[in-house]
Length: 336
Ligand code: FO1
Image (cartoon, rainbow, N blue to C red; front, side, top):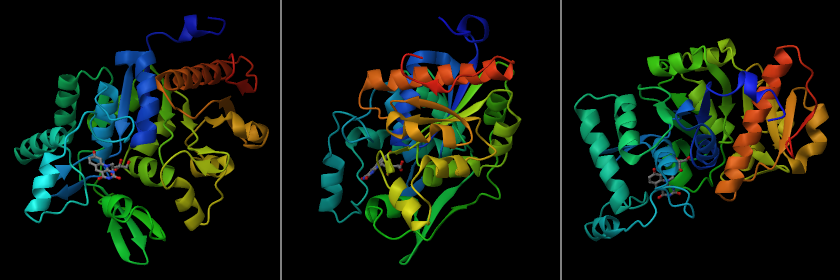
């Protein structure tokens, strides 16, 4: 490799902070590059209790995506799914606004059973990840109860009620995380962020307000990023003023935030050493006031996820190199 990968890269670990669908795509690309060297810290604040089951949507999206079981068209849940449970539930007058596929249902039933026995989300996630063949290490951000609540003109909505039942239509006036005062990072998360062989921390292109903030709200995680020996880079969820998927742009508008990379830099200020932006926004690079890597950030297939992950890792190497006193060119992901 032309850059310093031979010297500094190689056996080090990488930690990725990840929410649901968008973040999981990059996590898959990172896993393809890093295998067991990757640790994914997953948002747990989308969790909710439904039909007597404890549902962990972002965790399951990451588990299914990294095991190759996910339905890539739908974005969540399992490929080859059947919906007999939902049809039968409808027949007996059950709540069907939240779709639970027959195969997916097994995971919710088993997780609920094990939580009721007192097992932690961390232990359950690690065991299920292993059984599903996930290579990377999967860590819930916290084992405590944390809930993203969205304040709308209709009142406060639990995240899934806002996101799924109301399809993100209500205006978002405020987002807060119920339980944050007691939500501590697990020991595994603290150790992952404090590891002395940590080479890079990646904030995946999940929704900063709905998926990354509830991770950073967990006590010990934001401080862990600041104290980490490794650089922290974020991948922007914005391309050309639009969000790739989901309500990011709408929420930014409703919160009075400009849908720009400058806003993303401001949001993560003090936490990140660099931002990966799309080629469509390359002209902004020099004015963002942080190290920038210009890359193709739209992930449409596995090769594009792997390529973006490679560029993120190369960006991290460049920042480490610069810290070690080498010069850093304004990075262009193309052919870097
Ligand atoms: N998203 C939907 O838009 N509709 C659903 O019915 C739905 C069901 C569902 C079941 C399990 C699961 O793990 C995720 C599910 N999601 C559904 C996605 C989920 O609401 C979001 O992906 C995350 O919470 C946001 O990142």
